Amino acid sequence: MAAETRERIVEAADLLIYQHGFEVTSFADIAATVGISRGNFYHHFKTKDDILDGVINRRLANTEQMLDRWEIAGSDPAERIRSFIHILIVNGEKIRRYGCPVGTLSSELAKLNHTAKSDAAALFTLFRSWLCRQFERLGFGDKSDELAMHILGRSQGVATLANAFDDDRFLHHEVELMCAWLDDQIAGLANKNNPDRE
Amino acid sequence: MAAETRERIVEAADLLIYQHGFEVTSFADIAATVGISRGNFYHHFKTKDDILDGVINRRLANTEQMLDRWEIAGSDPAERIRSFIHILIVNGEKIRRYGCPVGTLSSELAKLNHTAKSDAAALFTLFRSWLCRQFERLGFGDKSDELAMHILGRSQGVATLANAFDDDRFLHHEVELMCAWLDDQIAGLANKNNPDRE
DNA sequence: GACAGAGTAGGACAATTGACCTAATTTCGG
DNA sequence: CCGAAATTAGGTCAATTGTCCTACTCTGTC
Image (tube, rainbow over the protein chains, first blue to last red):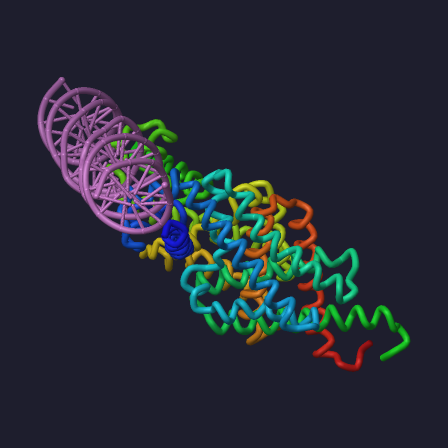
């Protein structure tokens, strides 16, 4: 089946690009991983940029799916945000080795001046608007996007340093700080709405 | 002069590696930028890793020098930390285009499984221990390193997102938040030492 | 059972890579 | 001023890159 082979190629490319970067991942590497010839490869993807496109779309779909799952699983927006924060722990080992898939790809494409940089940024936007929506539901109104960006940035920083220092304790500590920050924000909002209490 | 040529090579390599990444920067690129032949190049640096070594050492020296300057310029440790935070604004344009020089190099070397990854991490360590020292002077004791890592991580995250979204406003806003966080930490410390006040 | 078309394999290709060599040139101490 | 050492220029080398082509094999339809 062609669609299946294509899927296997994208899957392998996704992993290799995450682990070693887009530029250094060659046609030969991907073909060898999948176990097909380079010629067959060309049948599915004309250029390397086509593969990148496929990988990014795959990641977009997977991410969307994950966010939808969270949307269903917990009814509390705060709990959903905590789910996001905890990716850092769930994927801790991979992050310590290869960094954040979204952030590192975006950085690399920026340096390569690659056309697909905006597509990679769309991955960030997916998280951003999802987080924004959760904050809005919590009642943060216009500040929601700022808060979403803040937490997104914190995650990126934690991923970068956890990778640089291969430090699991730092990662866990920062996750706790982020959750505490979230509680503070929510408490502050409740305080603002009921200034008489406390 | 040989030392001068070597210096020019390292300087050009530094810039190119920052702007386009280590892997994609070739001997030919650097040689062309400096305006020397590829053969001459080999006389100064046997391998590509040698150049990377030179670039990292150059960055280490420059960073150390900058931190020393800050050490002398302001007597207030808090003000020094604010100097660090404000690099994000001072280098804002470059960061939005190419990201943080330290973070992006560290990420790339991690993906390449490169031996020099630890050397790149040493750049982080330079900032980390300098920040830690400032917090210690402010009286944060054992918490100083945690705080240093926290602020280092925040900077990294801001750089990554400012780069991904090419967003200057976000960058400025987050710098303000970091400064506010710093003030909070200091206020909290003073409060702990004089619990009777306020 | 012949045939069309999708799928696959293996290789050719020009260009570029890091690495290396040799010869010419410059520099400078005696 | 000379000769040795340091520096530079230009070019070669095998290996690898992305791209592209042709020939073979399968599958399903008439």
